[in-house]
Length: 318
Image (cartoon, rainbow, N blue to C red; front, side, top):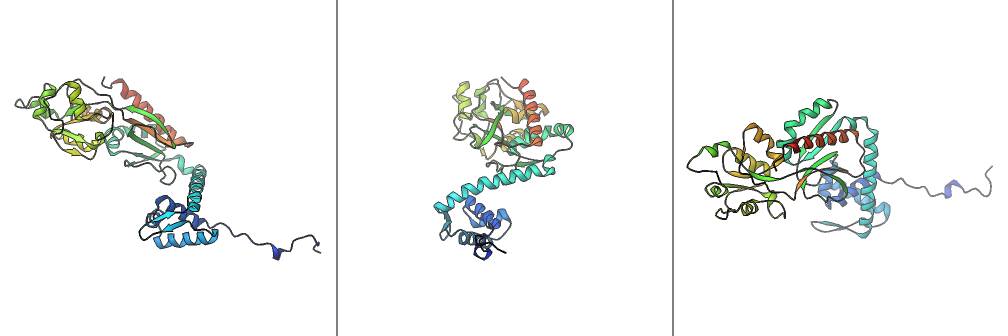
């Protein structure tokens, strides 16, 4: 017999479980500030994202977005919820990673195209010989690595450091000096014996040095060596270091080579180093990882990167 003090079950208001799909949809939309971009990330339609967000707003009884004709903006309540969800889903993804056995045998590495092609790819076979149990996937790009939602384990970046919210470790310095194809040295009519001789040759530029204090460009290098008669602005500008270096190897002019990225081509004879002047670089190559990440495969890869970089330092130009 039920006691008089017991609360009748009919009077207990049931608590509806949190709508996880709606929370995922909202978190993606809040991060992207776009239903369309969120839909692409979650492999659903923008209408589905909009429906889930409305469902969540109804569940919470608050408005999460200000909706315009072409844009959405978070409300104060939406801002607060978004910050909490991003952290919570990040912790959830990390917990799932730790629970999955396969994460110890697969590794996703993000880096710039130049570094992947000119430094990483030529020596990656040595890592595979050491750890044949690890499957490494190399992805290229210059955008910020998404360690939480993008599945990136290790990123290698060229920059000034000071990366917020991540663990960054300096891997290699990036001193700069001129390089060209050996064929340019064979032309007696256009000598390349002194820095002033560069006025007879095409200067190849890349955008990595444009507007970045401390990153040497042709103007800085020519000023250092006193080649005042050479016009530093001449020549084409390439969108990447890789393209400028390939143009130099093809004999189309002289580029400023970044030491780790020209090492392989110098050894193979595709490029030759010109003159003795080497400029220090405010940018360097960095290993970037998620703060607090505990991944044995990633640590093994980073340890190998450090060993390779240390070996390179022995023969680095001075």
